[in-house]
Image 1 (cartoon, rainbow, N blue to C red):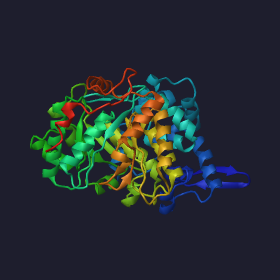
Image 2 (cartoon, rainbow, N blue to C red):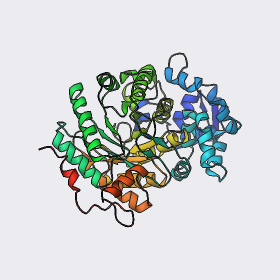
Image 3 (cartoon, rainbow, N blue to C red):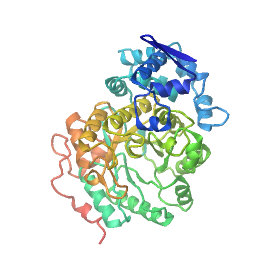
Image 4 (cartoon, rainbow, N blue to C red):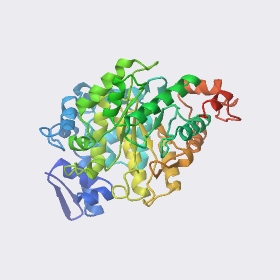
Length: 458
């Protein structure tokens, strides 16, 4: 039992799961699940109680039962006690204060990351202001490598997302060339296929590899098919660079995606066996989003932000190249408006980075949410200021296949100019060789290089 008194009112919370839910900033998904605080006063009381909670308590009380959930078992069984020891004596509030102080260095934060459980990270985020989350995340550096190096200080990478509603090769190629001209694609050139066809996924992989080889681009391609489809293509010798899968923070939610931890381990092992990376071997790409477990009725009464952080524990296990929270994609039932979307995106970035996960954010909203592109500009700017590893590059910021609004090639270029963020170093050198950068090292294409034109299908 946890409790706190506000004025003359005493609030009691029967377990850690309830305490975390009541302390969470307001969002529509928790209200839909019937677990949100009934008032602002109750939320503050829960935050007071949470701030005084010793971090060790999270190692003794599980939000989802150990016996029935393999994600919980992963969190508990792989917890790094040595990494945790520097902060083991702290409460949640003391950890927040320490993180905001000048004491923790980048290296110190990297050392404690394996000892931070997702519930600890979520707890700190719930008692933090937006500026706290930005300041702390900016101190964290998570670097990954495959054909280039992502996440270095002063860098911002971009996933080039050239989706097409019919997977038309000419339309996809045009979008890829448009993105490359504007400096997108160093995180990954990643296509969401319009169908579940393994044959179509194979053809798209071949197309991506052909473009990469012809232009000698130091990047990686990915077709965001289900992991079982990718495994089958790996067995057929398809040119798979990066294995994609959506993941969630409970075993039941992952089962709704048709996956478990053993399947992800099998896929990673298969991808590693190809040895296609040139500077590293981070071969996995995961996408997440607050509300995914609730939408699958697999949340077990836990709040969506805590479950989102638990998804990062799944990701961390497989040493991914990229992790992307698609923050506003699931819809207003889970994040109702711009205020909730902005807060959630900043929380996700913070929790992932604190846990040592290479976080990117798809700064996005659906067309029936109470949000617009001005709101996405605000979130994008805040995230880049706090060192997000990568963002999306979508033609015109409008994904015509998935039917949602994201960020454009020009949006990413504006952020690089505004904050002096450069692409991944290997990709930046390639842009210079293509004549796409000016004397001030800014991406300023004056014309399409001749070799680019040759890639457009006849």
